[in-house]
Amino acid sequence: MGQAEILYTPFTMGSLHLRNRFVMAPMTRNFSPGGIPSDGVAGYYRRRAEADVGLIITEGVGVDHPAAVGRETMGGGASPVLHGDEALARWRTIVDGVHAAGGLIIPQLWHQGVIRVPGTGYHPDAPSARPSGIWGPTDKAMVSPDYLEQVRVPTAPLTDSEIGDLIAAFARSAANAKAVGFDGVALHGAHGYLIDSFLWRHTNVREDRWGGGIAERARFAVELVRAIRAVTAPDFPVIFRFSQWKLQDYDARNAETPAELEAMLAPLVEAGVDIFDASTRIFTAPAFEGSDMGLAGWIRKLTGKPTIAVGGVGLSKDLQSSFAQPTVMTDNLALVADRMARGEFDLIAVGRALLMDAQWVAKMRDGGAVNPFRLDAYATLD
Image (cartoon, rainbow, N blue to C red; front, side, top):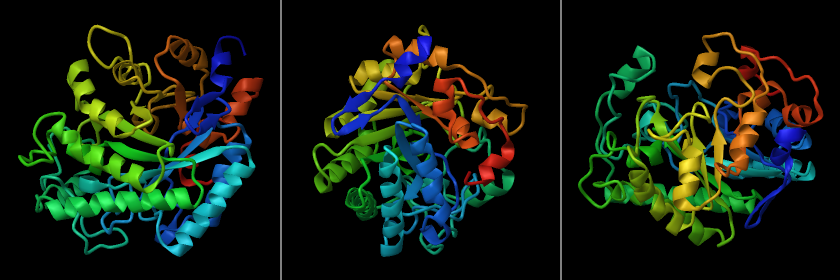
């Protein structure tokens, strides 16, 4: 294995004991009609666990709130949920299958927030949840004109009571995750979705306790983490996904400087986040001027918490480019290992490469030929 050997060493954080440093990144799958994962979902995750993926983070799972999921710019209409007897029974089967294969699995708790198209989803009459009633700036959005037309009209800002309901919804879903045997929870605090829409100054212009300065805009995320801690356990792992970029603006930044990043994330550490998942389109992209260190590295340096890096592992193009430009599978694990050895991050998330080939981690370790990149893999449960 040579230089990449570090990637196959165990990692422990609290009650999480991973056999290696590879994490399956959360990827929207849309194979859960009515919110209930289909029979094929269990096999989909089990196959990755059988092939030595250290930790699986599921696709976004809608929390127990009527506006959590709907149709959005990526499509959708069959997102899973984590409430209701039938859905919980199916998730228990999925978790048991992953555990039987020697793997660990964590759900990504998700609320689309401002990104949800009003009038869609399992409860179309429910209003979309927007901190300030706005979708955000529209001049840089890389979305279709049709989608933009449906979301650009302002709505009523969330009330204090509605915010309390949202926090309770996340807590219920986290408690359900623990009850069915998941190994922790991951909060989707990135890409312009609900939690991130509180963090970003262009979607949170509130002047009450839920808005204001950079630390104050983190209050909603902080209260979510505290609520989850209260209904699970002190050692129940909590992962927080954070990004600078949004669906509204790929060049957006929650934090312009390392000091601002520290101010936003320090309250989350105090509230109980165990691991940060730094979502970038390319894991090597410098986060701030004057340094080649990526976002995961800066988060690790400023918070002292383990981090997950992601973006472009095993492929020649980033996600957006792969839909429009020729893309091939590639071996860039030496670069991943070098950055990990430097202490920039602790875990590496792999998305599309694992979508193309369930055996990718084992094949990269053993020198096997991996499956080629193909666009139709996005529509399968291979």
